[in-house]
Image 1 (cartoon, rainbow, N blue to C red):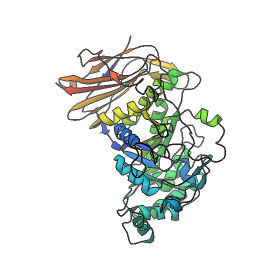
Image 2 (cartoon, helix red, strand yellow; image 1 turned 90 degrees about the horizontal axis):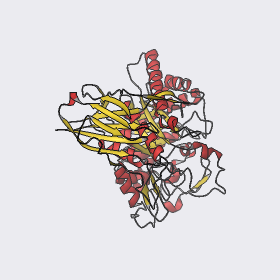
Image 3 (tube, one colour; image 1 turned 30 degrees about the vertical axis):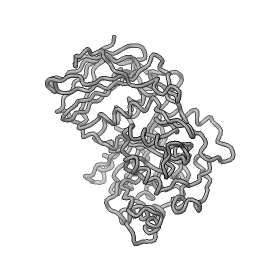
Image 4 (cartoon, helix red, strand yellow; image 1 turned 120 degrees about the vertical axis):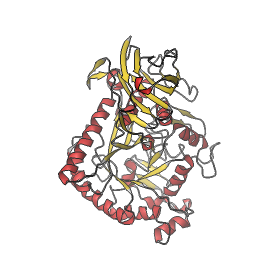
Length: 498
């Protein structure tokens, strides 16, 4: 059996747990919106057409913010298409996903759904095919109480109170050649700065996110961030990171360590931001908005032909996640928490059906994918402060990342509980974890659960929705100092004062 140690000391504080770490993402893509969050006529649908079963699972998932309406979709989106009477809304071709957008759901419906789910809305503006004027118009529509043409249009549509959206993304993945209106770093940086300046003229208190690289493997990574921040540093609050991971060539051990790339991504972007700030003589610190992250088998999507005949809400990117996916996913959550000093927000992409923790059948059932559980547990139990924890233990060799630790872990601490979130990346060996809790005083294990399965590729389905779910871990036998973590497992250990 492998062995590792973890020292927990509440004096070693990284930062408070940021609730926006547990954000999500709803894009007009595939079945995320239509037959996902919205399906009139579904047995659980309310008067607005929102699925009650999806709302219940969203609340259980514990998400706090939701980014909308894209994603690649936003770079061709005309927000005006989604306001006013539904029967008058135009149908448009969505070039991003080769589908037809009906615009049954628009800004007002999205905000109403967000409020029903208890979420803070986060809006993205189109800087692909549009620009400053359209972004300012959308802001006026959303946030001005009344008395202008656009705010009165919102009121006339039934939204009497302003939506008061505080966090805005200045475009999406503009570094990507796949993006409608793709730009160079200089072109985008100038447009983002102009848009930010104009939006702040309407509302100086907004939080604005500049587009960073859409992946650390992009050929412009680093230089993109430098150029964009040189143009926007004093006008924005955050710069975005996007990252998706998948198992490649049967390298399960390397896949389970994919958080190594996320660690490097965050650290590099923070370093670049601080260097730019120093050169500009600014005392301001730019934070990271990791507003797209997930496990996504992108290689499958890239090899698939586009949908024929511009369909409405076809099944797209519907990955069905197994246990190993959930464990790698849990490692990404650990990394986001470990960097809470600079990661101000994060968005799991996406919420329903499209590479999502929640799956639905049109007219039928909704269920939890394996990845639902690490997110729900972290959102529920991470509270107080993130603690600086440096696991000591064995490592193993991966083809992609070299030597990586078997144990990947983080701890949070509040007045009642200290919670350890831990991943055993070993494919074959259980790991005995020794917890040094002396700085906590007398503690006991209040709860310990493990997400694992004898088949690392076991999945949940509508017929067997709990095949992979957290189970009690009793290997500690009441001893708060030692617990055994099975191979390929996500683990939550909650310590309470005795």
